[in-house]
Image 1 (cartoon, rainbow, N blue to C red):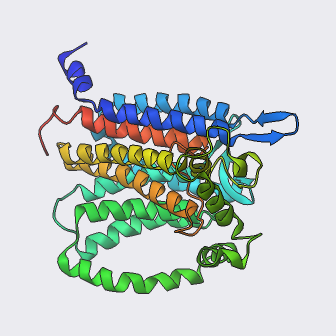
Image 2 (cartoon, rainbow, N blue to C red; image 1 turned 120 degrees about the vertical axis):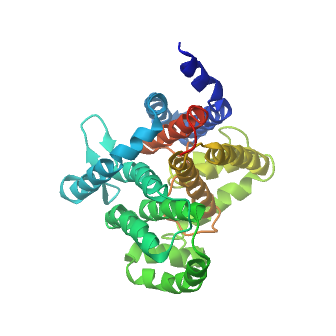
Image 3 (cartoon, rainbow, N blue to C red; image 1 turned 45 degrees about the vertical axis):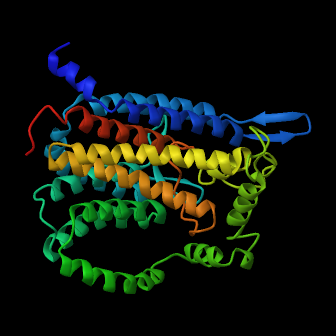
Length: 371
């Protein structure tokens, strides 16, 4: 092994790697419980956790792949990657596979690929390329250019319809923009105009999305319909109290009252079984995980690497915040999974690949000078 190779391994953020592995296996353990339901003859467990292990192996292989190459090469392929993603998103309405009433996947034979997950990686790369051209605060012209680029994949995802993933793409890019900074005048203008534009979004929402917003404000208005998820989630978490009911001891999940318990509401299963103490421990784990990304972004020796790490931070931050807020009834249900804890093939692979990208930046922070 060359001296540079040894130095790469020495400077890699091993703590971040350990946290990612720990969160993944906590998710598999929780998914084992979420996959079960009680019958008269005992407990029956579906194969979701086994599939998640397979996706995890693929994800860790992807993580290693994302660590091997010099991340600066992504700057060169940013635009080709962007247009490939746009083409794949354009294929979804034409040849996409419909699951749960939404056409969001492409059937590749051995698994269903969700281009919106690839779009999240793409927006990180293209956003980092554009924003790393300078460290000066963005003016209105540069801001319009960056947002215009992001609106292309985000708009295509929202029309699938997949409001959660589309908003997540915009939130990732928005976080990267704030990390770069705005001119004081522009920031003040957006602080005033931005909230005024929120009601306009109501006009473009589907009926079922409007029902979710209404049920968020008053779940009891439709307890067996749009408000059912929130009500059952709050019951599950509340019943866990301080120390929880124990592993496989949840009633709301095991008796199948809690819907989508292996995907969007997986944290409700965790809260019911491990209680407030367990939920706070998991939240603390996520906080340390996110902080390690902040450290990497701050220590990166070039702007491109810094914006990449910051973008991955916002990718995880928004998903964690929105999913937990949704499950607790503090935000509308928008279908955003909790990283590592919720079941999902494309999501698991992307999560681990993005961790590999941050590790890539941390490994090479002393290899070259700032530029």
